[in-house]
Amino acid sequence: MVDMERTRLSHDARHLRLDTLVRLRWIAIAGQSVAVAGVRFGLGFHLPFGFCFLVIAASIWVNLILRIRYPASYRLRDNAATALLAFDILQLAALLYLTGGLTNPFSLLFLVPVLISAASLTPERTLGLGLLAVGAATLLVLAHRPLPWFPGQSLSLPFLYVTGIWTAILLGIVFTGIYAWRVAEEARQLAQALAATELVLAREQHLSQLDGLAAAAAHELGTPLATIALVAKELDHAMPQEGPIAEDLKLLREQVERCRTILTKLTSMDQDQAGFLETISLSQLVEEIVAPHRPLGLPIDVVCQGEGREPLARRSPGVVYGLSNILDNAADFARSRVTITAAWTPLEVSITISDDGPGYAPDILLRVGEPYVTTRNAAKRSELGEEFGGSGLGLGLFIAKTLLERSGAQLTLTNAVPPASGAVARIVWPRHAFDQGAAISPQGVSEAALEDEGKNSHMSE
Image (cartoon, rainbow, N blue to C red; front, side, top):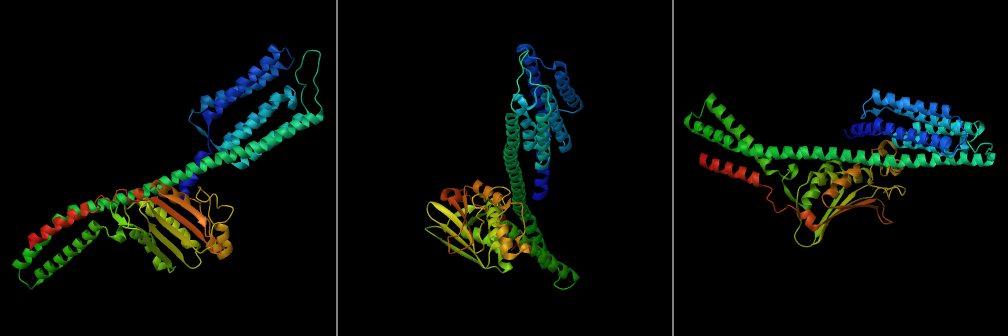
């Protein structure tokens, strides 16, 4: 689900908005027109004025067609965006051919289409446009009309200097393109990861709402179920103790008791089925994330220790999901065991999850927890083989980090201090943030339901 959503978001994020490109091209058209008119009429330099404006008019026609044909909110497909940017490169090359080639100071504008492509299109398309721009610049070194200059004079720059301009354009395209692509890609990844986090939160919230609805339904069903039990008991006293009717009444009472047991589980929301409004202790929280791993056979050592009263907290699906994600990651990479240490003081509450696996690779240790940074895959493959190394989206720790930080915690991911090995995840809450909301009785609905059921049972007796 998250993978599909990421693909969709990535696909949509790379589509260049037509209105943005059209506006930029109008600015370029205005600049080109002012430059040509200023050189011809302001400075009095001779240049092929008519041909220059014919080239500029080609851009005007394309812009008008785009504006009339498509709405402003239309997003260009990759092929269309690439074709338009390629047209802009060729249009600029034609204009520079008429006005001095690379000796024209405006030849630096070759960088603009490549920069737009780097921010909006795939690296492959940006590379193609970059090669087109470099190719056009190379042709302009070899063939171009003279640079407009004062009447009766000509300005001829040395070939070595023109080659230097070509080199500067080449390096500018390379470095500017890479930088723009990297910045845009990081922004896209962050936006996609946050969207994936919202999906996880929405799913957890939906499950939590189901817990609340189940408790409310159990409370509402308690009274009619007690009435059915009362009527069944009275009929049992009134009817003969032998025969088909007696057997049916016995079956009815057994099913009523079964329904009561189910409703009691729904209303009590015990440790195995913790509900949305449940208050749990720190040790119960740790046990909840550890329980699914116990049947798998991996030893998980749990240590709970602290000063004073053990902290209580309102059960948060986001916190449970985040801690479970970190524990899953530790269990995947552990060689023989995982250790969980839960500790508390009057000032803070902490949970430390460590394993004895290979730990985080040095090249990603400083970036671990960022979106789409896949953790320890290389080390895992070398230790356990390709079959078990696997590959992921790199969103697990990012989502866990986001969910835990929303609860007020701070997550620190490091490697164990040598000679020990493995990864260490330490989650620390300020005590007041962890205890927040714990004073509210989580069993209000459940206790009311049980009280109603007890009263009805007393009446039936």
